[in-house]
Each structure stands twice: as structure tokens, then as C-alpha cells.
Image 1 (cartoon, helix red, strand yellow):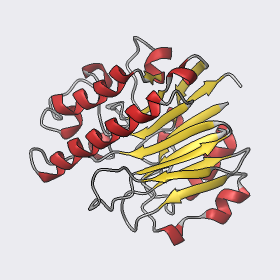
Image 2 (cartoon, helix red, strand yellow):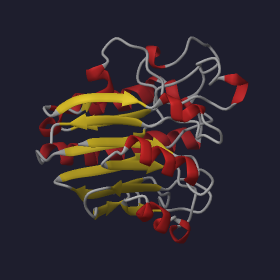
Image 3 (tube, rainbow, N blue to C red):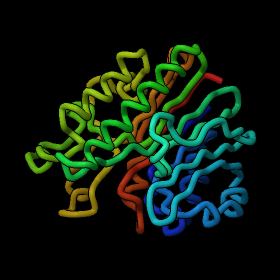
Image 4 (cartoon, helix red, strand yellow):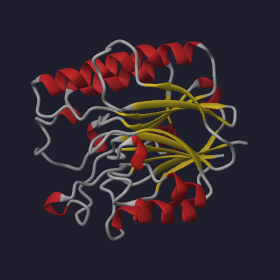
Length: 257
């Protein structure tokens, strides 16, 4: 089974790119982030024509998450995280797919920091941590996939001082990611590539793609039951280089069937 996560950065604008990648990569399950489309604008017909069923939570112009499945209909189990009734941002969706519980997340960016956006980032991650603890404790086969908007370690960013004040690399942000791993979740890319420098995001500005000045923001975490089945992982870097590309590349893993 092949499971992927892809921050599409506008599904309407980049639908052609998405459909082309689906046809080439043929993932069984896909988590999408930053749809930037209201619920009624989700291109369901085009996705179904490409061979996928979907559940989604849209939001006009911002955020938005979706789960696609090639072999079975995803069964929606949760939208949003508990703990803040005032939070209306579309950042978390969960579905049962082919015997796996798939959680797709688009975590807050948090910039500028310090400030209210950074405080929201940290509180959102606290809510995720509580829910993730419940999922892990249930001993289910679970995938937590998406754009975490956290650079976990210094090796996950190109050599630079330009991000020193950025919310993505702050000690509090990295601690939030570490707390997930401390619960027992496996960072799938790091399991397969324990030493390599890995990037999944290249900003459009300052020729960062051309200079390979990237960051690792997109992560797939596995519960104990699934970590034992991990046999491969990768980043489809070439997708970032096509015309009209998202500033993220798809990340994928393969599991024993």
C-alpha cells in the first residue's frame, strides 16, 4: 500500500498538476492540504475521473484538507480537533480507509512570532498532541500525515540564518514535534533515511528551488501497528519543478499489504 501527503497549495489552480501526479505515482491513499477552496468548490468530478473517492473539509481562500482513496470509499470519522470551540479553521480531517485510520493535518504556520499566530500554532499542536495520544493508546493502525509546519531538526533546513526568527524552527515548535515522537509515533522518512538531508518545501522567493534551499515540513507519522509494516518512503521532488507547481513536493510511504 502506498500512502502520500501533498500540500497542493490551491487545488483549483493546481488541479492539472495533481491529476498528472496521481496518474504517475498511483498512491492508494492521499492526504491533501491547503485546498484553498470552499466545500462546494472541491473538484470531486475530476478526482473521481482520476479513480479516487474523497472526503474533505474546505475553506474559502485558506486552509482546507482532504483524504483521497483509490480502492475504497473513505469513511469520515472526524473533522477538526477538540479543545477550542472557537477554532473554525479547516486543518484536520480523519477517515477510515482500507482498514487504516488516516489523519490528514495542516498545522498553523505561526508567523510572525512572537504574537497571537504563534500562540495559536502552539495551542493547536497541544490539541493535536492530546488527540494523537488517544489514537496511539487505542493501538490502532493510524497514519498522521500532512504539513506540520515544523522543521524538526537543523539538518531539515538548508544552511541559512534567514529563518532564525521563523516560527517553523523555534524551540517550542520543535518540542511540539518531539512530543509526538515521544508518544511512540514513527517518523517514516527518518526511519528510511536516517542520515540524509531531506527537503519537502522550497519557497517561491529568492530562487530557493533552483538553489535547492529547502525545508522538511511534510511528515508521515505511523502508529506502532503500522511502523512494523513500513518498507519504503520517498519524496517526489520532480513534482516541485513542473510548471505551475506547488511550493511543496509529495511525500510517500509504502507498507506491506
